[in-house]
Length: 404
Image 1 (cartoon, rainbow, N blue to C red):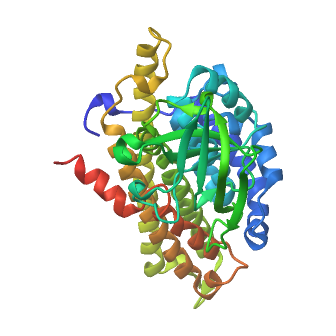
Image 2: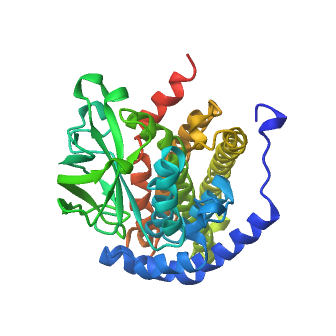
């Protein structure tokens, strides 16, 4: 920690909420995890469960029906749920990712129209940035939006979009000025799923996170009103990057939850599994694996919580500044370290998730390789955390650019 001002604490009410979420994850979510993975089925029942316990309200302020408990509490919850089931944790992560553009850049009318219905769990969002030819490079975006009177007409196909076919609306990024370049030529829109011209395309068959549908939303002459523009026309790249600077903390929390879940399971297994007449946790080879796994999880947690605390402090300062003009918080300066720390947390925690789950499989030996035990699923689920919301190669670029 660079200064005393960077210290953080987890309030007692957050710790109490964590315990309640942990109990739900252990008793209600974990028993469903293997079935969700096997059937590749979206867990509508668990989404309702999260809504009933105000967990889907964690990304939102109280004026929009949320808990108002901030980024740290949100990602504590993601971590706890991911210990049990990474697919179910993604439900909460997308609650944030798919609404942050509206929360941070949208008009007051957009915020009032969409956020309260998401906070209750009535509506489900999605975030549609990536395309078949534009993953890490937004300059390759092909989706276009053309102004026609008082409406915008959107044409294009997105790819790798979470909540496909589940979402009630999509945050869609489209080129509105091809000559301006991606930093000034892209605009963000809210597109409701029931608008004519919107359809659900191909769904992917994935290695992990199989309980969350991913695929191609298609926009074929979809008309939306001017009121559905998020922020300013031509500033969509800023909306996307400002969103991802925060939402990638959810990926870090998911990765950390997977890693801690695998560590806990491997440690419990090692206490019970006997070889040569002894529990295998009496052997130094296993002890050292478990020690390294636990240490890496603890280090990742400190980095993640520090990054979340930076976001919460930055939000508090900007909320105070925004009271004067009643504008969205991101119209005011942010802590310049937020992007750097969120990239570091995502990078470190996702790499830890891969290392730890590989070791968990090794601790279980042959049992770690079969579906009867959860660590093989945790290993498969961990891989995507190094890829989505910016590959780890991109995170290293983000971090390195702050060091020039």
